[in-house]
Amino acid sequence: MKERKKLLAYCGIYCGDCLGYTDVIADAAKNFMMVLEKYKFDRTAKCVFSEQLKDYDKFYEMLGFMTGLKCPMICREREDSGIACKVRKCCIDRGFYACYECNDFEICGKLKSLMEGLHYDASVKNLKAIKEIGLEAWITRGKRHCYWSEGDDCL
Image (cartoon, rainbow, N blue to C red; front, side, top):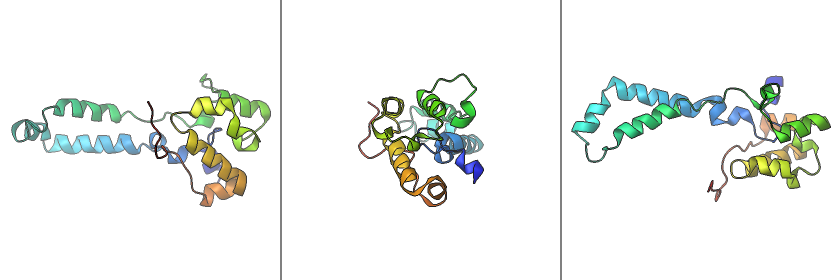
């Protein structure tokens, strides 16, 4: 339980569900590249599907990029890394394990500016649920949110 508890970032995102932390995307891209290489699919793309896959080289390059989409460390391990996080600093200064211990997290400018456009909705949903049922219950049986909500757009 202790290991799983430390996967909760101060802002309410659960690192254990993150595609970067779990390497889901990076591993899938690497495995796909290995299959493409094994079967010399670049030749198939060029000779059989030259029109449909005319940008195959760019696609393969993007897969290569995606193999590096890995998070180097969880939030709680970054405390001494020099990465400035206003939310983490606020929680530490106030003696909070995470923002759910603060009565103002739903209107907090630090939390909103950090998460807006990426995981803000998921963060707030997690924090509300933790506040309602408690951290240990949330970790073991709660529904965790980590990704974009319907209608979210990064633009």
